[in-house]
Amino acid sequence: MILENSYVWYDSIGKFPEFEGETESDDRDIQWHMAICDLGNPLPSIDEWNAPNIKLVKKCTKKIEFADCINSSVIEFVSEHAKIVLNDYFRNSRVKLYPVNIIGTSEKFYMVVPALYEEGENMDIFYIDDKLPYKKNVTKKFIDAVEKNGLTGFCFKGADGDAFYVNKNLTKKKKASEQKQVSLPNPINWVNQVKKLAENQDWHRLSDVNNGIMQKLIDSGDMISMLNFYDEALKSVSTDEQLLKIKPTEMSAFNQILSDAFTQAHEKFKADRGLKSIYCEYFYDGGDSCELNLFLCEKHPDEDESWAAYFGEEGFIEGPEVNQFLDYDPEFDFEPALDSIAKQYVQAHFIRSCLKIINENEINNIPIGFAEHDGMIVMLKR
Image 1 (cartoon, rainbow, N blue to C red):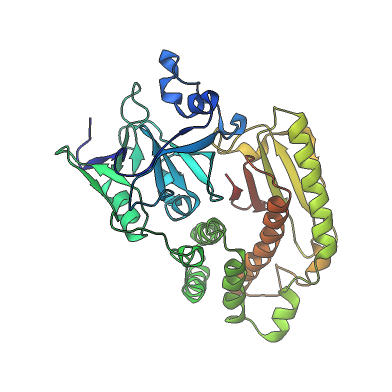
Image 2: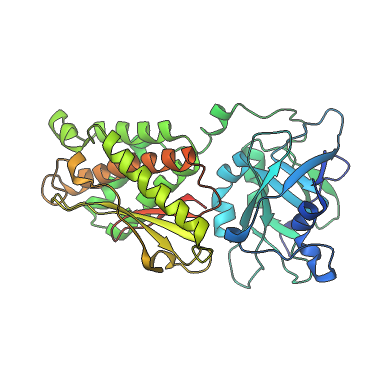
């Protein structure tokens, strides 16, 4: 069934290479939609998921083996690049992306699990039949985003029943450095928007804008570009004296304490299956008792929008002090627009430290959020 003005995200069997689980157990994991007839394993929550190994079983001439979308029967897997550039569509449509290991490539891939369509909900990816949760409907808006970003391997079917391939003539992907530049925002445009919202005292909208920009930069996976973005923005609105007050000083001691905190958190996760996510929160008011702490949460972000508030008595891990690296009073030193930009600049440096430690310690399959105290959360890992 196809809803009016929508398309089916169709399998590309016979046109692109085909994949299956490396072992019977791996194959049953990815055939979760067949669990009702005991031909697959029931789909667990993401935090309980052990990424299965997926192997190539059929090649196709003149077609790249590891496109941005590959198939195992009716199940789609998308590349890390596709996850990044289509992130807004996945998130707004409540799509869950389960990590898988594709044998033969070091690139990360994710199994696509859509959500059930609810009447009146504005979704770009969804299924409409409880018995066919693998049958994904998509909007033309989603297909246009696939085409615009040069994503390969995607096949769709319209109401007329004809299948069509987007970017079907592409035989190789862009370089990673080119891919990550696709959706990065312009720092000066953001500065102008901050100034206007601060002038109008539209603080709620300003918070939304700042959070959206930060999340997009994090999702790009390019931390150098993220720091450059905020550096250029800050320089455009501050004096040399103000810059010296805002810029964090040498952070090696800070990073070591933060690394120890994440190591402790990771060990607790291994020992306690009830833990589902990590929330990182920093507090800075210009005083002497300001820290970046970790909270081990008992809720997954997909379960409850207030997931970060669910941590037990043993769920608090003290992290490094942040006041020793900053030298300004956020309440009185700057006018509102500069204060907002300065906070985002500082937060970007803290986030970069967190992500570097997370990646170095291979802390995978644990959702990790980050925020200033009483601020909106951005996700470092999903």
